[in-house]
Length: 374
Ligand code: AMP
Image (cartoon, rainbow, N blue to C red; front, top):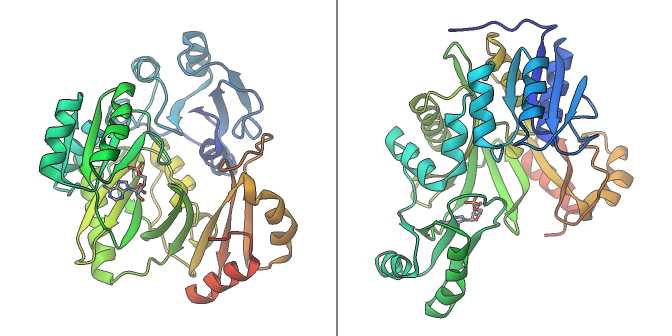
C-alpha cells in the first residue's frame, strides 16, 4: 500500500551519522520533523533533529520510543540490528524494509542478489575453512581478495592474497567468521551510481561518479565520470536493474569496477545515500538526500540534472585543520562538515565540493591547494 507522509509529519532515522544528518537537513527543509536513534547523544544527526533518542541499536526500549515518535522510519546505514529493524517493520512503517538490510549485511547474499538481477560480479567462492580457501585459490589463482562476509567496510575485514606465503596470513581472517574469496580484478576505474526508487515504484538515477580511493577509503569523486556515454548508460542500467530486481525502496548506492574492455562488475551495494553521491548537494538540481526523503514519503521524484562538473573531496581527520583555514576563501568550493567533536586520522569529518566548467582545472586547483597530498 502506498502511503503519503505529508510535510509536517515525523521521520524517524535509525543511526545518527553524517548520512542521517544530511537526510534530516533535506527533510527539515521540506517541513518534516525528525527523530533520531543513536547510541551517542549530540550525534551528527542528533544536532539537527527535533527528537534525540539515545539508545543502542538493539535496545527494544529505544526502538519503542522511535516507533511512537515517527510516522515513517528510515535507516542511514546497514549495520543496524536486523532484529530491531524487523520489529520496526512489523510494528511501524519502514518502507525500505528489512530485507534490504539482510542482503547488504552479507556479501554472499549481496552477490546472489546481483547475479539474479542479471548483473556481473567478480568470480568468487564462499569459504568457511582453510581447506575451502586452498581449494578456491587453486581455481581462482593469485592474486585474489579474501573478505569477511559480514561487517567489513572501508577495506576493513579484507586481505589481498598475492602468493602462497600471504595465504597463510590471510587465513587468520577466517577466524572472524565466514568469508568469500574473489578474483583480484585489475580494473581501470571504480564507478558508482545512486539509484532512488520510491514507494510508488518510480525510479531515477544520478550521473555516474568516478571514485578514487586511498587506503581503501573514498578520497575523491569526479562527475561527470571520465567514461564513454555507452559505459555511463551501462552502469546506470546495471544499477537500475538491480534496484528493480530486489524491489528496493529508498536509495541504493551501487559501487562498480570498470575493466579496460568496458565490462562493468558490481562490487558492493549500500541501501542508503552514499559518500560518492555527496556531489549532488551542490552540482545538481536536487540531492540524493532530498530524493531519498521524497522516495520514502511517497512524493514524486525529480529527474536529476548535473549543472556543472564537480569534484568531491572527502575531509578526513588529517585534512580538517587545513580545510577550515583554506576552503572558506575559495569561491567555487562548498564546505560541508558533520559536527563530529572527536577528530581522528582517517575519520570522515566532512567533504568539499569543487564546482567549475572543466574537470581538469578543478583537479589542478585541488592539487595546488596541497591539502590532499596523493
Ligand atoms: P570493498 O570493501 O569490497 O568495497 O573493497 C574496498 C576496495 O578494495 C575497493 O573499492 C577496491 O578498490 C578494492 N577491491 C575490492 N575487491 C577487489 C577486487 N576483487 N579486485 C580488485 N580490487 C578490489
